[in-house]
Length: 49
Image 1 (cartoon, helix red, strand yellow):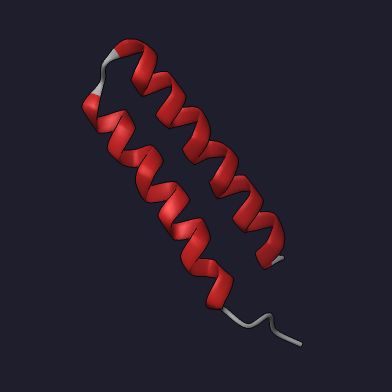
Image 2: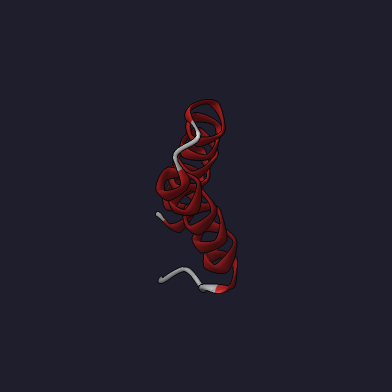
């Protein structure tokens, strides 16, 4: 479950960052960076079970 969430956040973050770089929208760039950072922080969460 955690792995799927990490992959989803990573893909969303990279997509948002790429979109922001093409369009020049700062908020989308910051959101992309935040999603990638959150995906990297989830690396330290232990899976349940």
